[in-house]
Image (cartoon, rainbow, N blue to C red; front, side, top):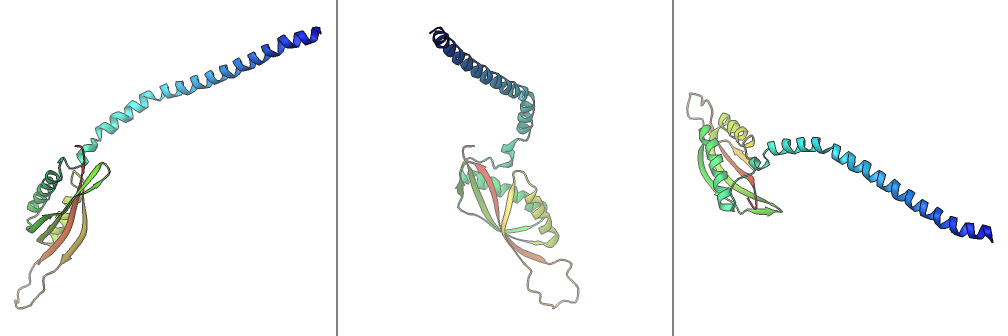
Length: 171
């Protein structure tokens, strides 16, 4: 009877002790995880400053509406064309496409320029800020009718391509 009474008192105490051991171990592991997270704070703040320094918005067209974004895209392209002495035949705005939070704005360009100018145009457009992308590129040389004796230094090439830029929808 005495051992039953001792067991009836000792067993709940032992279970209570186990419960507190598990709770203490859980609290200790959470404290270690939180300490690690707090220790990462300084490095995360430095990384956040670095990301802000990248200025992600400068890689997108600033225009909020498709028309404004297309006008900005045309202006940037025209600047590059003028710098490389290209003769623009036409710039046509194609319908925009919304892709999640981004808006794809595309213009179709037709121009005439010598090969060195075409290389300069391609480099100028693809290295520009905001990022611009060239698709559906086509280049044609004029039909050469040899009637002159003097050589032509560099013939004008007929170039056609789609120039695409992206804008943030809610910008």
